[in-house]
Image (cartoon, rainbow, N blue to C red; front, side, top):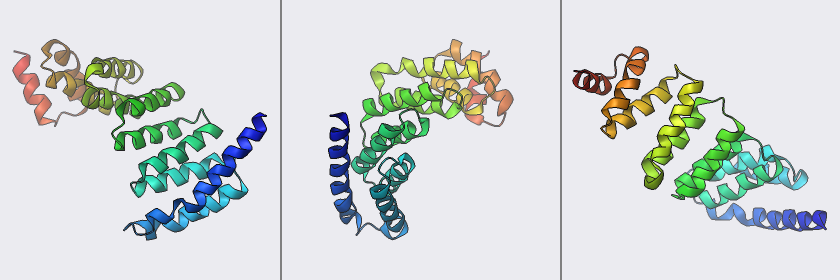
Length: 200
């Protein structure tokens, strides 16, 4: 039964894939990526469980601003290889481009779950919390603090946590992180200026 359902699902995916490029043929960037995308679709027809082909296809759709189709392709990649963190990360990026921020958040959470050893996975989730999910803004700091514990000298994590506290006018927390950030990037004028002002 499961195999039969999966077969129907793949068949319907192929029907969609045969028609899917037509709507992008007039896009200004189609000449650049169209052949690669067609090659991916042809490859998928012969190798329906090749997650990397779906991932590449999703990147192509994203480049053509076809975010719904990118999400479809990326979900196919994830269906085949659910623990691949960068599939989840790109899915989050596609949702974010669509302004579906709760779905982007969920994808970025999965990204971090499957790969907690990359600083970017903390900063992209924190950015979304801080700038796009106002009711959950405090989770940006929780995410960055976890990242800081793991990567205490990472420039991007320190920059984000320092500037978000600066934006929030949280002097106490800003003064905790600013010296650490300035040590790594002493030329940042905005943070240096605010540090000199608030440490008095």
